[in-house]
Image (cartoon, rainbow, N blue to C red; front, side):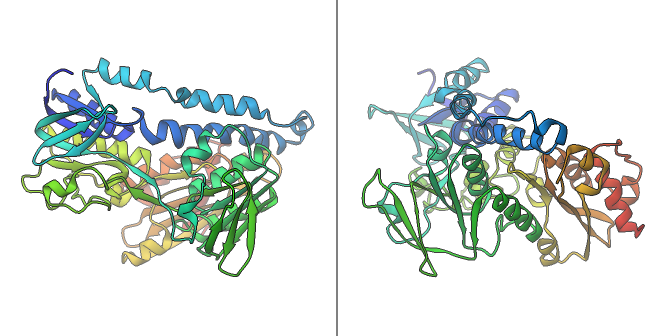
Length: 467
């Protein structure tokens, strides 16, 4: 297997683990990645990539249908077989050969098996055949084991077969009736993808009073309106109490807290995530298993003497997003090598996109989060439908753009965009927030006409009071 001692050992070979090893190697350190499933992890095979592949055909069709002169050319329906085949391609056919080869090519050893901490700077790996090998880290161990779908406390839910993000992104056919428990990003994206792909009945159940409850209230409202128009039933403000499925391949019934019974062919549980820390040996170094790993801004796990244990990505609970995990991983590779780095973006400018139609793109704090943090803020809004680009995009294009402005420092602390393709607008807001660009300077960042980014000028005018 090669040497058993490395500068850095990474437990978990998802996108975060790969990046941590890559940046450690870039700093001249030796590194091994321990992985018990597919190198590339959740994002590559069961989340970001396959889910976006499932959404893209419907999104393209919706965009064409908004253009009167193009709408008549859209005949027939989506090719479901082709959509699923394309999805298979984006998930690399669930073959991690290419990603494992990439690690090998940059000099990172891939150790197959389940990695568990076995004392200070030691990781024991149990292979599929039961054999074990002990690895020692000269400098650091990085935990990058990610998260799995959480199962909410609904009677009977643990005893029946349900879909989670893995089943829904890897499914071989489209169910006629799909029930979705959870109205966050996974729930709303997959409800829409499957409705577009031909599911006759799709229902979303969300306990909070709105979809995307972590975002601005108007975002959830605008998304709910669009999903409802598409024929998806949205039930907010309701929790589930009981789930029943008499036969594994038969229908599933979900009973809501008001007594309503919903019946479907598949039930997708998309109600949050839990850290994969149950079985990674935390007890051997005095930590409790089962929860997210608490880290400082140098991504060192708190409560570990000597500061040799790091946690990056979903497992530390800071920001459960692929791009934030990779960001932390890049920093970890540098920090372990002795560079002075801190993960401050997690506190200031976390960009997130729901790839629904309309897309919901946001970065920084919501208005409520900014007020709760003690900022004096005002918000300004503008409708994308009132921009030239929005009008040119076709009939019925609308959606809200909002900035949350710190009135004392005159900088943006949050931004939310709702509309078709607005995820591509987000990085300007991310730069404005991370760079603390003053509003007076932003007047000189002139948006090109007629692009959707012209909304920036309109928002600045709204802030100034120009009517």
